[in-house]
Length: 114
Image (cartoon, rainbow, N blue to C red; front, side, top):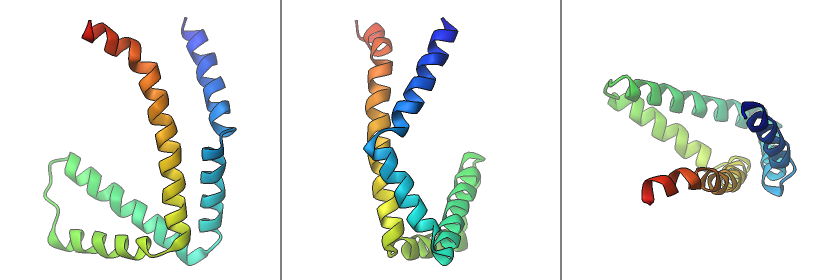
């Protein structure tokens, strides 16, 4: 049974790569990455998000400076068209994955509902 699930997972991963949503994400990422300054800012934004998330998960309080820095970088990121396009493409892939997750977990939900 585990082998069958592994095979299906590989098929789903390939099917995902064939979707318009995935192709849009790949194109949007390449466009954003083509601009060195934008890509550097994007990586900085990702690192800030990761650091804040890890700190919160560890139960640590975020400082005012950390929050201010995060807001400033987020404001810069939000003004860049290639990053906005990337985030929109991410939403498309996330919607697709969310729908897939609903279908996969429906049998589990049915157990608890009935």
